[in-house]
Amino acid sequence: MLIARIAATAKREEPAIPVQLNIPKPRSGEQNYLTGGRVVLEQARNHQELLTKYGLTAGFLDQTATLLDQYETAIKTKNSGTSSHVGANAEMQELATEVQRGVKLLDAFNRPRFRKDPEKRAAWKSARDVVRHTPKPAEEPAKPEGDSANSAA
Image (tube, rainbow, N blue to C red):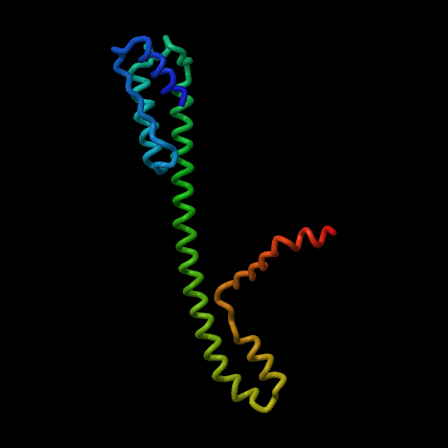
């Protein structure tokens, strides 16, 4: 982050500077990164005059604050979307269970009804089997290494 580089440059030239900016790693978690960014921003604002002397441009801290706000909004949007997805998935599971109950009830009526008609009985058996999960496609078998050389010849 530019602010940390400017602070490090200032600290090398003036070791007594009270600026100590520790930026968390981006992979430390969204909330830790956001909180760390806000702490760095606040420290930089407290020492803005000094950091400007070493290259901090006017308006940069305001731009950084805006970006942190946008990042926080994006985190909230993502979390809200995840919650909605989880809720929708639970609702779909409940509806699938309800549909299966209805199919079982229909099966109780249709088995005796289609007992003497093999074509309708077969059609009903096919229709009543509700797939609850989409099956995963089968993986392609790995080709032996020697095959590519043989096919090119």
